Length: 153
Image 1 (cartoon, rainbow, N blue to C red):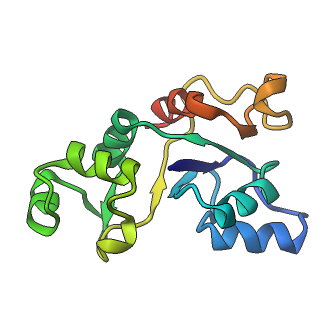
Image 2 (image 1 turned 90 degrees about the vertical axis):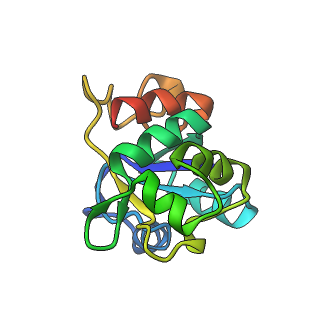
């Protein structure tokens, strides 16, 4: 499962990029979505790679994000009680593990919002005009996306 975070805004960009970000449900900077590892999603991510940071998220980071930034409809916080009542899992940690393994998805639970509205990273981005491999904040992070997500929790 990939975590995709929008890093740059879309003013004066191609409409295809804007449409792809809209299909990924990324409407604002510092918003994060979780997408499965499928060729269709990877193609969309590659198309917007100059505007997002993405990589493979692990279970612990996902559990932390769901505890701090997970929301239900009505802007209610995601709690262990809700997960226990509406899923076969006992708490958010087990639910996050199931999400990472592909056993569950956000679409299985209607009331969970699929977008995580994150805080800007503590200590800021390095630069939003270069890729991660060049010392910036854009593109493919790999497993190091967990460090960025932890700074944005």
